[in-house]
Amino acid sequence: MLRIYFMQHWFNLSDPGAEEALYDMESLRRFAGIDVGREPVPDETTICKFRHLMEKRNLEKQRDPDMHQTKKGNQWYFGMKAHIGVDSRTKLIHSAAVTPANVHDSQVLEDLLHGEETRVWGDAAYSGQAEVLREHAPKAKDFTNKKGSRYRTLTDQERQRNRTKTQVRAKVEHVFHVMKRQLGYTKVRYRGLDKNAHHVFAACALINLMLARNKLLRRSQA
Image (tube, rainbow, N blue to C red; front, top):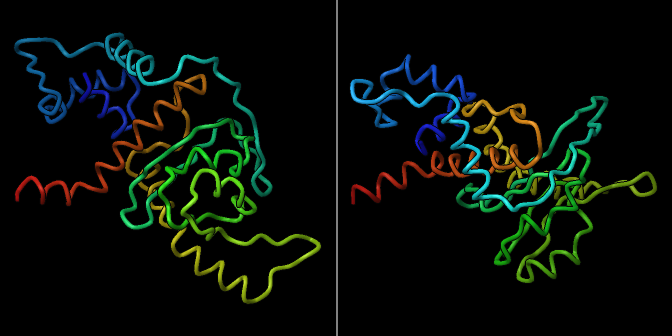
């Protein structure tokens, strides 16, 4: 059942879609360890119950906050937002948080820090968080992008520094690329923040496995 659950994330399958795919594709049945000559494929209800069990065991029991809308540029979006902390050297996800879409990035910075950082990179949305960094990442230097305002525009030197920082900060975009393109996760599937948060956390774990697969294979062969 755990392997079926992973396949749902890898191929962006609903519960009935997972049942159908297992009947249609022998390779998926082999991965899941299902021999239809001996046992039937788990039906969509069984797959759904296992997913609910995973959600129950891995999430805090708290009331789901409502999803909200936010505006980015001239476009309005309704739903939730995923915030991810990525190691700049390995590109692996070390922390993740999920909030309604209207929560500003700066409000979850402390949830994305593990405390042993030596440098913290981020876009201008995370600027002005020196107090949070001192409390939750005391060893870290602040390398977030500087933010201009209507009263003070950035200097040419500050813009150049921002471009340099962005080259490092952009590594987090690779993670979102894998999530959207390889896992096909571009829209929420379930109703309620907790269910979708669990989906994101499981996807992050699978993304780490995908990004680290070559290193893990080398270790297993050593």
